[in-house]
Length: 518
Image (tube, rainbow, N blue to C red; front, side):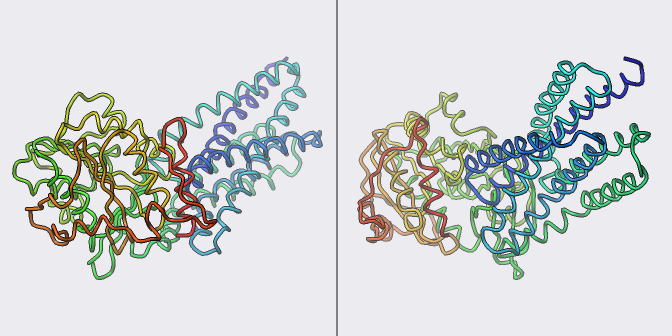
């Protein structure tokens, strides 16, 4: 093989590696889009991976029909991937904001198959071209596939650790599209002697690149306006951390601040006190001591503010996975008004750790444990609603201590609420079930637990509150017929509850089914 042929074959190998990086990034990007907008991360990632691979199979099958003009075919495939993939996130947010329900899922699954098909089309063409140049078929196949698989690893790591946290989903898609069209233009230039009407293809490629570049710099602002349509009030802060999308909204009258994590409402400043008072004060009042308090979640600092109303509190350990939430709570002036700057209090120690791992590693015991975690709407959160997790919580609660767990809505997700309660009880803890009306959320449920028997009539709340009273507390333990443990399902059957475990994580499916109409 002469030097010119070697250079061309090397170009093919490098091209296959780079486009494979782009392909895997689009694949996981589509999974992330589905998880964020459509919910249920396991289902969405499973669907996108399956559809993408199916598309690759279709593309590989169709590629056998292309035997001539291989480089030109590759170039136009890259143009297609660049346009479709580059505009994928931008378009998805627009469809979610303006199109009828269900259109967003149809769009996502369609482009997943289409980009997968184009990606599957690429590799056989590159293998044939390498063979055409003079590389033996077995060597050309092995080298192109090596570049493809190695590129897949690099692409996955890039998306997880750089693109998503640093650029977000809209900019990432446009950037990867720019890379696709750049590869196409480089290949087009290096093989220009083989291509008729070279300038026409080059001008089209440059035009696509310019459009994607405009999208890279200005598309996010437009997508932001699309996303704004998904929220009741204007967005005042938007951040995509390493773990989640953080959005803070504020109404025009500046009277209602709302925090959303991955699209799920965490609190409204107009009524958060109802939620946090029930979360904190029955627990603190039942516990024999308050010296050492653990809060799992609660990175906004509002639960910690309620805990610090008790003068005998010596230490609060707050464990929240995402440092970006804590940073926002410590710097945003509106959140500082709500939490009164408690996360900077010398009694509060913040640890940015996974709650499960923290409990496995720590040897501390706590007088009060408050579990203020997001709902179990994905696989990573589900483990924090399992028998194994609640057993760890129990094992770090001192005799005479108390535990409170937020447990979603017994009205909207009746089976989920009582499954969480059943899971807590399965660890041997004594429990009381409470619920409260929070206007921004609806009717919300909690599970109060302790190693000791719980008598709500003996609980005496002595600190200032805006909503909760001793007389009211017993009433929060009464459930209506449509939200009670004995409620009948639509088919007339009674709820059949079983603990949620790491081995049998059925709570995710119950959660998705319960909330699909809300």
